[in-house]
Image 1 (tube, rainbow, N blue to C red):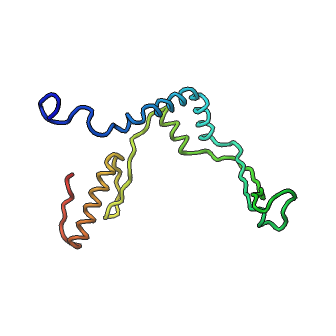
Image 2 (image 1 turned 120 degrees about the horizontal axis):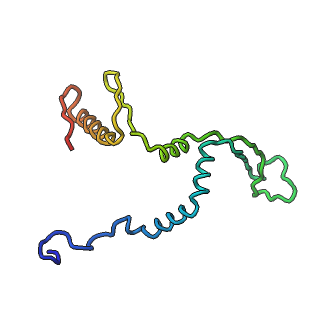
Image 3 (image 1 turned 180 degrees about the vertical axis):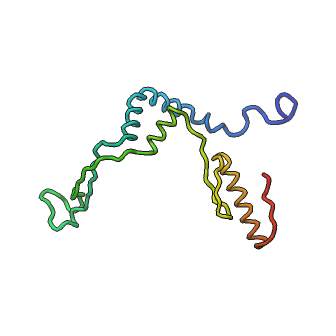
Length: 154
């Protein structure tokens, strides 16, 4: 019986909510993002557009080289190759920026049907679709092919 005499859940009983548990670190992260918002947005745009230099470096253990350079221990890592290239535009970063500015378009998932046709459904229905398909496959395995199976209505 609860404190109010009506039964049911007691106030403040059970585990604390996960979001309550992380309120302080989330608040600190939000403050950090807000303080650096201008540079974060610029970095996001730079990532989306590409065109900046990227240096790829390849290191190798000194003991695996034909000749160990002077002053280098056999267990040290040695730079053996360095290439600079231009970063390609990042499509995911660009899509993310556009979604934030213009609003995210409705997401759809394309499905292939047994008869060879295809259909698109809203992404929020995809989980339900997967559940129905899994139920159907499980029933087919249990009853064998040819049996008529109705999907669950959960």
